[in-house]
Image (tube, rainbow, N blue to C red; front, side, top):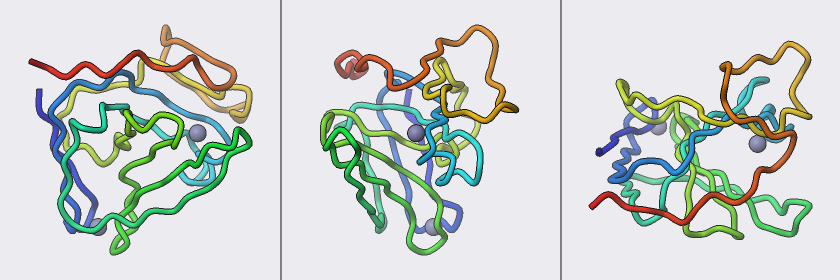
Length: 143
Ligand SMILES: [Zn+2]
Ligand SMILES: [Zn+2]
């Protein structure tokens, strides 16, 4: 499966040639601020399966763990596109909203539920973690 995507203005285009290792909602406070009050929704892919054209603007923050967290977005229109952690360079998040429909992807996991507001809801039956979940398995590219 190949996924395409990009930002709202079209300056950045994305192609992914793998299935995600996970699709997660994240309700951490950083994500709520980034996503205008809701969870972010993050498809996690092997970094080397992602190709990108156009200019991505990156901002970094040092997390409590000491890891550097980086957010990538279109500097022209502001669409959030990517995220990654210095602790796991082999993986990169593509924000689900940046992937072209119909992609058929849906969250399989919700994380940082401890920081979610009381009104937050997520799909029945998906895996739940109050905080950061265990590390994802190693990347597997489609043959
Ligand atoms: Zn844009
Ligand atoms: Zn988060």
